[in-house]
Image 1 (tube, one colour):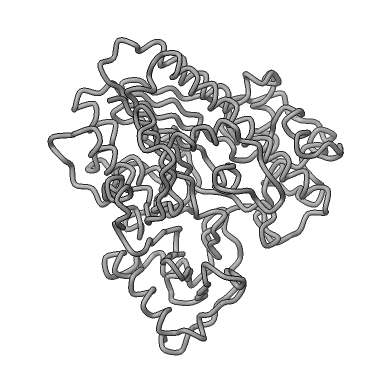
Image 2 (cartoon, rainbow, N blue to C red):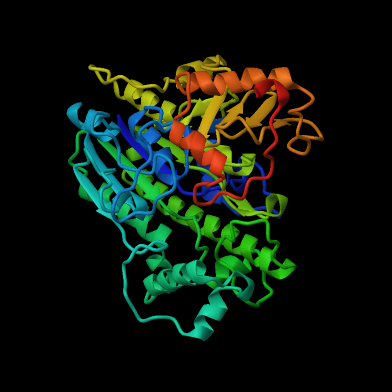
Length: 472
C-alpha cells in the first residue's frame, strides 16, 4: 500500500464545504468536498503544538513537542521567539526514515520555506526532497525593489511600518514573473507532486508528503479567484496585522475574499493532483491523509492573524480526512479526539512496520470506525500558552498561571463568556491535565516568558492577567 500525506498551511477547517462555511460566506471547494465524500471525516482533530515547525515536528515524528523543554532555539538564519521552532531532534526517527527502512520510496514536495532554513532538517529520510522557492520572506530574489506606489498598492497605509514593508518587499519581489496561475505556489507544489508520481511508477510502494504553504498569507491570487467573492475593486490587502486593529469594511472584505480565493485555488490544484492519481490507477492501492497545521483568524472577534493566546477554534481546529484504498469506509465520520502526533502512529500502523519505534501518538483509525475514543481531552502547546480541550470545555492560560480563560465549547455563550472565576474547580482540573501532559512541570524559561508578556510571533498582547485565588 502506498501512503500520501497532504498538508496545507493555515487552511481553516470551516472553509472546506464538507465541514461548513466561515462566518463571511461559503468558500467554493468542490475537489476538497469530493475527496471528503470518499473519506473518513474527523470532526475533532487538533494540533499537538503550534505554530508551523512545532506542528510538523509532531506530524513527522509522532513525538510530543509540548511543553518545549530544550525548545529555546536561537539558531543562525532564523528568527528567535517561537518555542520549539527548531530542527527535529537527532534522536527522534522520522516517518520518512522509518518507512524507507521498511522498503518505501520516500519523497517530500514542499514550498514551506521554514523547513529548509539553515539548521533545519525536515528533509531527513526522504529519497527525494524538492524545495520550491519564493514563499513569504524566503530570500529567493533580491530585486527589483518595489517603488513607493507599489508598496502603497500592496500594503494599506495604516499597516505600513518597517517590518510590514520589509515583508511586502520580499513577497512581491519573489512573485515577479509568476503571474500565470500555473506559476503560483500551490499550483507548482501540486503539479510537482503529480510529476513525481509519473517519474516513480517503478516504486514497489511509496510514501509521498505534499506540503503546501498556501493558503498561508500573503494572500496573492489571480484576480478571477478574488472576484469569485468580491467583485468590487479597490486597494489590496494580503497580510495579517496581528493585532485587534480593525480594518475598514472594504479592506476586511478584501482580505476575506483573497483568503477564500486562495483556498479555492488550492482546491483546484488538489483536484489536479487527485486526477493524476486516478488516471494512474493509484487510488486503488493508496492511503491518502489530508490535514492542515492550523487555521487563521480572518476578522473573527475583530482579529486577523493566528495566536496561542487567546486560542480559538478557527485556528486550533484542523481538518483531517482519510481516504482509504478503493475509498473504503467512505461517508464515515468520527468525533473522537485526534492530534497531529497520532497521524504518525496511524501511518506506522497502516504500513505494517515490524520494528515499531517509540512514539507518543496513538493509532486511531480502528477505534474511530468502532466509535471508541483514544483520549478524553487534548492539550495543545503554543509557547507559554497551553490549551486544554474537553468535550464541554476549552481552557487557555499562561504558564505562570495567569490569564486564565475558561470557555464553554457549545451553546449560545460558547467562547463568549469567561467562566474561570465561576468554575474554579474545573479550571483546577484542566490545569492539572496540562501540567501532567507536560510531564509534571513547565520549562522555567517559558514561565519567565509568560511573566514578561513576551509572546511568540503571531500572538497578541495579553488580555487577562488576573490570578484565580486558589492558584496563588
